[in-house]
Length: 439
Ligand code: 5CA
Image (cartoon, rainbow, N blue to C red; front, side):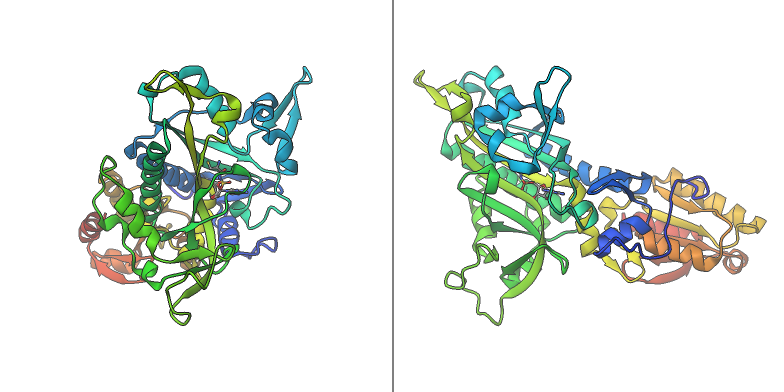
């Protein structure tokens, strides 16, 4: 993509409305624009990242055996009256009347709707287990939407729902999601720590929040320092294996939010305990028959008797993750994208857009980069070198290749790694090779 044609409205000054770094950087890097409080448009650069985060989440859900569907954003109130949550949910739920005066709502979550779909289709234990998910916009009329996409009113969530014949089956489904979550976040370059959590309006008695450590996190957290060394992706993955040992391994290290923190239960000495702030990027729940019972989601068991199915639900804040990744990975100059979610792999900078030789060298390398499959943002604008460097650092692509008159004369380009700041002068082909080796 040529930057001269790209819709990338960068902002030089720090926007006064943004209190935290990810919000500031997302506005400055032209990723999002607010349309009303807590509601954002995703501009091309931001949307690309959102799609990459979504793709990782989808791959891991599919690998864990979950099946994707798509439920609507608007739901009928009658389903929520069946579960009893229509009244309970309070002002966070956006209630709407259609032209026939029917009560509708913009879904804040989907337990009722998925339970309705399930009960209409599945009648026998032989068709279990099933885990279904979708990636869909949600609306919660938060009292204080803040921190940009981190606490929005409209936000993109991946929500999965598991259905099992009994509690033992439900725990297997829970464990699969537990593993899929750890892997999803690790693939985005995040260390997300599962912590025992309260279940709030979703209900149930087994629940984990997945929390990444960041100074601007909304909750205080405490964890074993061993968490900081944990390498999730090092373990082999077999979703069909018994995942209970895996679950135990990753839940025995102490980790708790301040609501659940109990010094009496914590084996880590106080001076070793990591005390930090955290951002919740995912939350999983096992709530048994909380919805299946009142909504009549039953199947025939092996002995023919009707059994209310055991359910769990599993949420990931897809849009929140974009902000959370920035909170975890930035410096004074801007964003530092992990390669897996970077909007482009490479930024190619022409230092002298009015110089025919520079243009020819850049155009040639741009063509090679594209042919080699590197999604490249090519800064072909007539701007000062300072402005170009600042823009590239701000948007945080993993690699920058800079071509100027001096390099053209010497037959070299400058390759810069955004994360380490390391620079090297080398031939264009050597730069391509290095990118290939790093990919
Ligand atoms: N039904 C369950 C699981 S599917 C549920 O709704 N869980 S939740 O309330 O914990 O939300 C799941 C995830 O959505 C959270 O972990 C968080 O990452 C994200 N999320 C929740 N509220 C917001 C919000 N206002 N803005 C952005 N992300 C949010």
